[in-house]
Length: 458
Figure 1 (tube, rainbow, N blue to C red):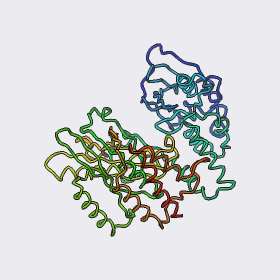
Figure 2: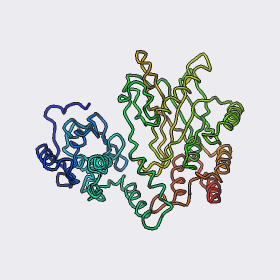
Figure 3: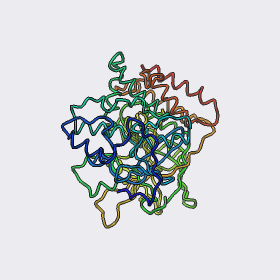
Figure 4: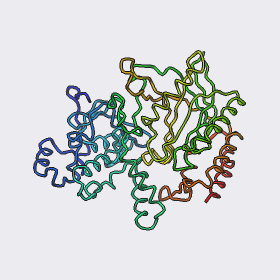
């Protein structure tokens, strides 16, 4: 639960003239009494207080955020539906007031705060919770109640993503039937809201194993990260490429070295599994080949990665158990402690910031001894990313093998499809991979050969 506001806080009223201004407590009560659940609330009538009272959101510290022109602002959601900016302690009456204030600090020319479309609650836009409220309590409501005016509520960082969502769905209806699958998955992603670890409690066989769980910080559980991690840019490039190729989940292993003196885990190579997850017969041979490759390169197994193709890059309950199993297996392979790094890559989730995949390194802390039946605690791992000097032949060959493996697969991504109004899926892949570029600029020409092979698959 969120703490109460400090004494004599500064209450900021900026943005009060916007359509989504929060109603006063009296107005809120009057509106709900007069309308009830059977009548339609206006878009302006669905406030943070309404969402709090109906349990769609909960108060908490640091659970609100705004990402704008490279800057991130963090806020607390208070019990009365107001927002406290963590950096200064200022209190804001509405999402728009807070967004307007923060954005004007970065861009004084900004005229509106774009509240519900800019402010995120636990990583999801507040407007999505407004949609959920209407679906739950007013299923017959015209969805224009929540979309009305929200075309104007797109922040600069969110603008491209928001326009992509609307325009792609528009084209689906009019002239782009091939995008139908993407838009459907996009809607499902929005409904898959991660839960906080503290809400899980004891293991429950009835709980969906695909439930996503937010990551905790080591500091939040009163611990220090017990090891340092450095990851090569070539590892990220190959892993990101692999995860982009198919709409199905993929998996791979990570090779590197563990230095017990410096407590540094260095990840030097990714080893994609060129097999289907459901193909139990082929898996042993693929894993044996990877073990031989590790041995020949003088590397150790230091972790694994997998994809959530169109969902958030957060671990599911199943992922948490798998990660714990990997950690125990690696730790049992020698007399000393050796960490095992887990990485989740989310290439096609429309909640990502920009076109780049979200890549999430994580680890699992065992539950307290007095609660052995609880789930392990997933925690975010701080990582140093090291830029390689050039793209190695090993990585290039592995990319070509992946293209051949997925060439005739039914779940191969359609690279010529439009990812946004101005770029194709292949353009999106190129842009994401460019974030892992080596220092040698010749890599672009080398990768163009790989991209040509992708085009030849369709």
